[in-house]
Amino acid sequence: MRQQADDYADAVIFAQTLPGIDPKRVAIWGIGHAGGACTIAASKNRDIKAVILDMPLLSRKRDAASWPKGLLKKALDERRAIDADPDTERSFVKAWDDSRADAAGPRNQTLLHGDLPYDFIRGAVERSNKAGTPWSNEMRLLSLIDLEGVEPWEYMAKISPTPMLLVAAAIDPLSGPIEAMREAFTSAKEPKTLVELPKSHLENYFAGFDEHLAVQVEWAKKLL
Image 1 (cartoon, rainbow, N blue to C red):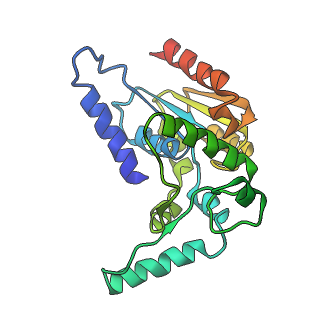
Image 2: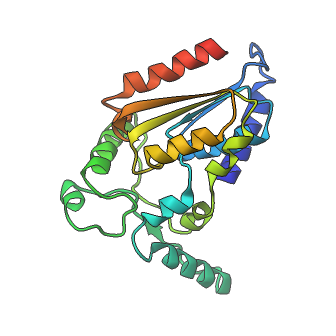
C-alpha cells in the first residue's frame, strides 16, 4: 500500500505536465484499499489539491483480525521457506467464495465469506466478463504480509491543509465500522467533509451507486 501511495504521488506529478491540465486542480480518489493509499499519499504530497476517500481502508491490523485463523502465519511460514530456498513454490488464497453453496456453508480459507460478498463479486465478475477482462479469484499469499502492517488512519491528521472528503458506509465489514470512520474523521483537521451513506460497503457499488457517486461529484465540483 505504501508503494501505491507513492504511485498516486507520481501520477499527480505527471498529470500536472499534461496539456490542458490545470496543475493547481489535480485531485486524487480512492475506494477501499486504494482509499487507504490515497490517505497516505495526500498526507505527504502538497501537489495534491483535494482527496476523496471513498469507504477507505483505515487499519490493516483490524482487517487482518477478520482473516481465516492461521492464514497470516501460513504466509509468514512461506516467506521463511522462500528465504531458505528461493525456488519454493508460491501459494495463493481465494478472495471470495466461488459459489452460492460455498457462501452459505462453513468458511474455508477465503478472505471474504458469506452471501453479501458473494453477491458483490458475482455482479463484478459478470461485468468484467462482458467487458472482456476476465478475473481470477486468487491473490498471492505473501501479499497478506505486505498489507498487514499498514495503518492509514494514522495519516489522517496530516492531510490538512488539503481538502478531504470522507465517504463512509453505514455497514462496512471491509474497510471498518462506521464508528471507526467517524473517529478517523474527527482526528483529521479542516478542511474536511464527512458523508455517511445508508447502505453497506458492497451495496454502494450497485444498488446505491447513483447516490454514492453523486455526493462525490458535487463535492469535487464545488471545490475544484
